Length: 267
Image (cartoon, rainbow, N blue to C red; front, side):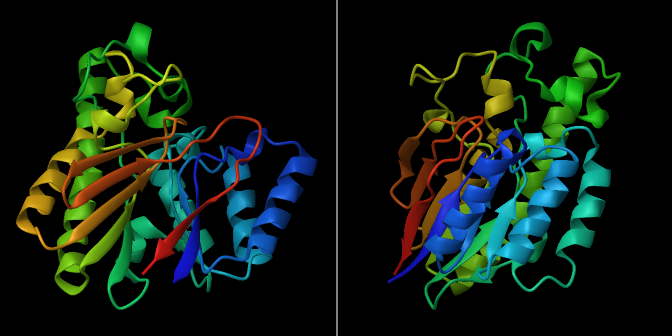
């Protein structure tokens, strides 16, 4: 059996210089078949530094999607443009949103897309439930409450559309597909620090219903295939068997210190 390492919400910009160095030493010593990161790698220019270090310091493939923090202090278009330059011609750094279908073995493939809190679960209340995204992502500036809600819907639909272009094709070729995404697609795995489902003012930012609805549809249309979703964002460990052939897992994480990777076996 092959194993790859799964990590999420590293927030590397919050680590001390010593901890940052130790984290890359840890990954190099772990030396998995590959590393999967499900978003919130770092913020601002520190994200660029971190991606270059993943590319230059590690000798195994690094597959990743971005999280909301990865767009801080910039806008979506600007971040994506810069990201394409970083991964261009790289031999070991892969942005899953544009990498397509990644074969892991004859039976299993990996696909990925960011996802976004699309405002469709819970109650959208910017004064009580809005995260720091509102202040730190340029595209949100100057939006009215109505415009903000529409923008969240648009982002959820955007990433669901990207997923529609790869997941069905992957399931035609592979009986098992792993989907890496940042925002949980279902309320059932969206826990707060009290290990209860997040409150109604957080859910609009903590779940991506557009992707969740598509996954339900896809699981029903492919009963003989297994879809495993790996995500982060909430920082609280969770797991739910949404359908017999649809499993969703959220990995634990935190701010200011790094967490050991979770090893995922590939049969």
